[in-house]
Image 1: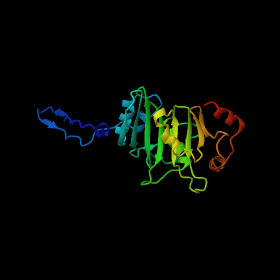
Image 2: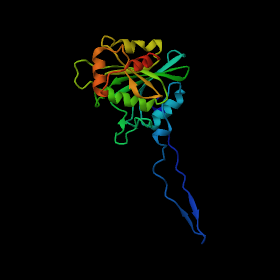
Image 3: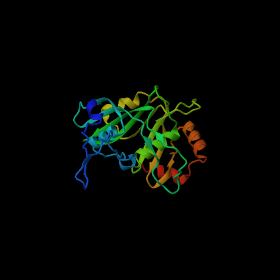
Length: 233
């Protein structure tokens, strides 16, 4: 399994230049292989499992475990490799001064049905710096710019830093619902993302402490139009 998420070794091929005088000069072997930029490969619900794992390999994710007890679905648990993530380009939201967000600080459980990605579950990693709801929003929008998503996340109401403990979106296969329900005593906040809207929308059914937190970060209270849009999940 570990071999699936390690770079495959390819022998570097020396290029040969033949000069006019007949002298043969060999270029030095390359020490590293060129990688495409992150923007050339993005995550999306429905992507084939092997393509998801290729993204993980390219960005140095660590595979911790995999579960394939039922042929209908599977789960990978991984630790992201810290790739730099940027928001998708949008005229009303693009800010060149905003630094990238690095994908780290949590464990990822990726769920597959029929060999395709259907959902993800993030779990806070206490060994790394955490992230707040605003950073979670940037992460999800950068990872899944083309999907309409309702994201559920947990923060302690009394936590002034609003550190995200868990988050999930998409479809959670039945055998893995217990992973979410284990901490269901803490209310989940909600935020809705749509590719046609540059700003996330906070649904009206979100617990009070989530609404206060979202309004303080965005500077506004969700409008009725936004609430109606959020209901179309």
